[in-house]
Image 1: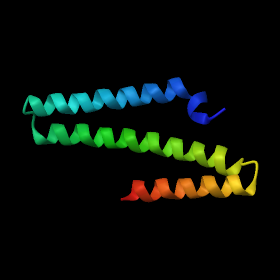
Image 2: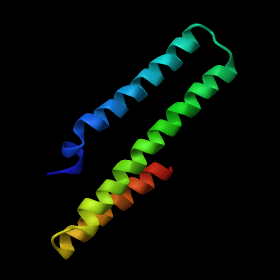
Image 3: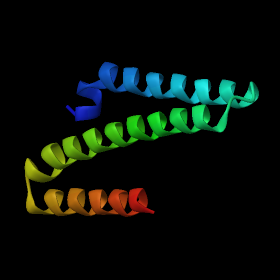
Length: 90
């Protein structure tokens, strides 16, 4: 079973919290809140996204690279993670 399916409810809860944070930032902008308040909201959103991304990267590495059943599966999963990291670092 894939780690995203196994942890589906936990991951969805995190995504929903991030969605709520984004909506709070939208409301703050609509209400013409101060830039400091909006920046703090955005920093919180970024931290939440980074945390979720790091958790999924770690789980991918553990399940699909370290515990791969064949060298080909390990190499393919490793390459997939490299591409994700490249995109993430842009």
